[in-house]
Length: 262
Image 1 (tube, one colour):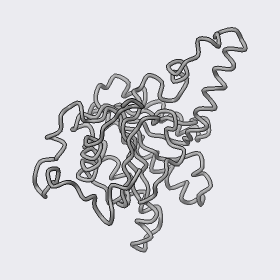
Image 2 (cartoon, rainbow, N blue to C red; image 1 turned 120 degrees about the vertical axis):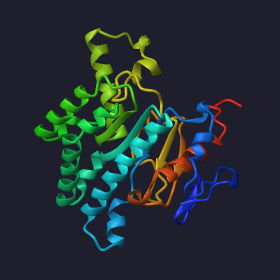
Image 3 (tube, one colour; image 1 turned 135 degrees about the horizontal axis):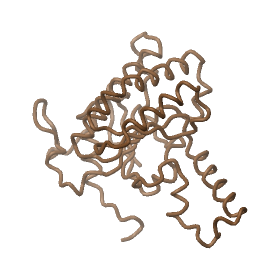
Image 4 (cartoon, rainbow, N blue to C red; image 1 turned 180 degrees about the horizontal axis):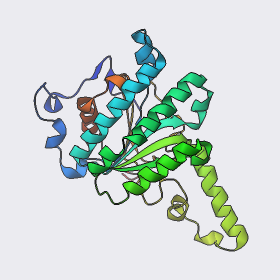
């Protein structure tokens, strides 16, 4: 899992290079080379703000704007599912002011989510919703129900999310069914187990992009990303753009995915 980028921008092969003003390199890729499901670890908001002498919340504000741009860009490319890591179960350990700022940004997003609905974007929140404030849970329900019929890109916002917690929760639900006689242990396979996850009914993740220079998965989509390709870049999330996203897709398309075969 080597980094695909050093410094400010990924160095693409000459055949895939995008000059300013030219069409996206992705437009030249075959449909089957475009991943169905992309996960993004949006890292680097705080460092982006610190480099500019700004409060950390300013990095999150800029990061939220980039999130909207990338969602629309991914939809234009024909990507069906996009899962973004917005707030982990471990992020509650951050300074209270920063947590409050992130939650308020989410409130603003949900308040303005009608614009996404009109763009045929379906919004889903995955994670432990019970750990959120009641007003947030109510807004989440409204947004999810309001976009349920949309047929464009499906956007999962991972909020109060942890991959281990998700897997443990699924195991507990299955154990309860087995104990009550509602499920035979012999009926439990990967497909059945997957149906108890937050992402039930969704395709597995094909590609995970992590910005900000770190090279770890940070408890993100541990089950769903079993055979995902990884793309790491030093670019901080607030500086990430559509061209950088295209570079990740170009790297993905150049890899041979054998899924354990030869």
